[in-house]
Image (tube, rainbow, N blue to C red; front, side, top):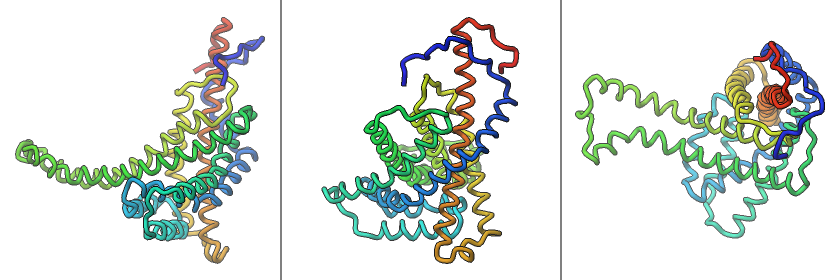
Length: 325
């Protein structure tokens, strides 16, 4: 990435209003390139799903109890189609019931092989984001490979920490009164008006804490992905990344729940594809997820281009246009 914005010889056209940006986002996200890019990401993600689960459970088991990872799958139960959820749950159950190995050379090698196979999925999303940003990959081969592998490794480690936090946070909240009693703080120290709020609010907080942590992980992962993945030709700003990440996170939850409901009530992948029904459902869900991620990137690309135009026109002393927002 260059250290400064290269100034063009002629001022770029002024950025248009939000209605124009919205139309451009819909146009760009609806073209065939976005759809094909999402399909490619879904294909590689399907191939790397089980190696990714193997690496995730292996890394998670080095520091935490792997039995807790299986219980956290209920968070995505209503997001995934039932057949896909059963397939993933069975694989995770098979992994967590195996005897856990210590940190040996063989385990390290197997985890690295699993991570490397998952890297193909990371490279596909990196290339897809370059297409969305209308940029060509100018990073060297080794740089690109290391970036893809590092993205995969950070995603697995982040998922492990998120799982650990999803397990620990509800337990801490649930047993908070007992912890406070050890230091001499009991419910009698609180006003009576707060007793009902604490007693009724704690179960609700515990119930929604794990999904909230998962959403924070998805949102953070998208921010980092939008920041480092595209091979940009000019500098970017965090304010041009946050809107797309937030929109993609919310859309991912809504579309995933809607897709799961559609599969459960209308589409019958088991009848259509037979034994491959679960695989087809997983691939379709991954396609929808990849499309949502690219849709958020399209929005960020438009906002970034708009901000770039404004910055260049300001540096060149061109008056601001009245259509700017």
